[in-house]
Each structure stands twice: as structure tokens, then as C-alpha cells.
Length: 71
Image (cartoon, rainbow, N blue to C red; front, side):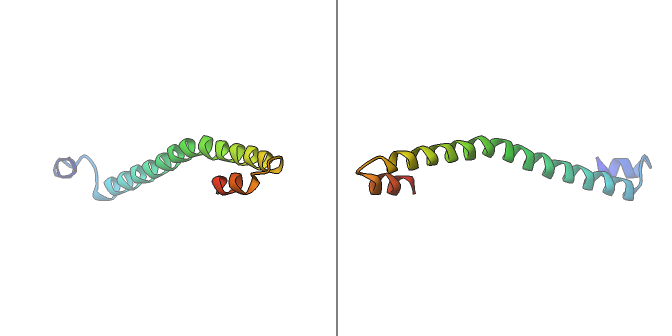
């Protein structure tokens, strides 16, 4: 497609390079945002479970085993 655009003088090489770089940047940003949206709830749940396990361990005679599982 790039060659066709250049052959038909619909755009310049510089313009196409700018469009390509802009598209790559947009994709990287979208990928990062999607990954963070995926990981954030998981990280929050891990924190919550960790706090629950700590609370259980403080009240249990099996605290060492609970903390080992937590790790």
C-alpha cells in the first residue's frame, strides 16, 4: 500500500513515516493501558487476600503454615 501511495503521489515519504510512527505509538499506549486494566484487579485481590491471611495467621496456632502458604 505504501508503494502505491508513493507511486501515485498521494503522500510523501515523510508523511507516511510520521503516520507509521504515530500508529506504533498509539498501539504501544493501548497495549500498556490494556495490560494495566487487566492486572489492576488481580493486584488488588492479591493485596486483599494477603491481608486476610495475615489476620488469620495472627489468630491461629498454625501461623507459620499460613504465612508459608501466603508466600
